Image (cartoon, rainbow, N blue to C red; front, side, top):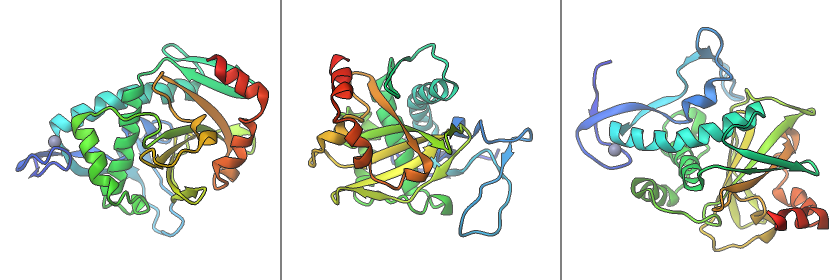
Length: 256
Ligand SMILES: [Zn+2]
């Protein structure tokens, strides 16, 4: 491939070779490629469905930044793949009352990997990701990713849920969703990846919502993997949070 010179969107290095970066990590496409390594996206407002190869890519980053993001993505890929296969080598997963408690991962890697996906979708010019706008947070996220800074569990918190459709989990679902709001004050951006709903709460920690904090991916390297129905993902987390105010769940969670 001929090299392409430009400015890196992450480190701002100028006149450097810019790679065709994946917007959503490549591992997310593994379950949806066919044998010819192509897949067919279906957009509601676009009748011209065409085969796509190698996922959605765009020239965004220099090799150094690509390498940095791929380290975080590697940890995230491991979490998603093991949860998807329900086979655990690195992760520890305990289940009670229909709730899975996931542990054994690198918190900061997962946090930065997820922030980087939402940041890439936000700066992408591809139509597929046009709903993802971080506005003033885009530059803030870029800084965090550039520095590899620590971000606490309640800042730009992440919630991961296993999605069921008519009672079954489908690992091959990759789907952008439009943004929503929680309790009128927190913007939530979501993406369905490998059949998991990944939610980013665009909240710098100013608004505290204890019932939602149960679900945050935690600095201790643990999170609660809730199971939700695809048909209900537009319903806010509050309805699910009711379950987490019940005594058996609270005592389970307090023990961990
Ligand atoms: Zn760079």
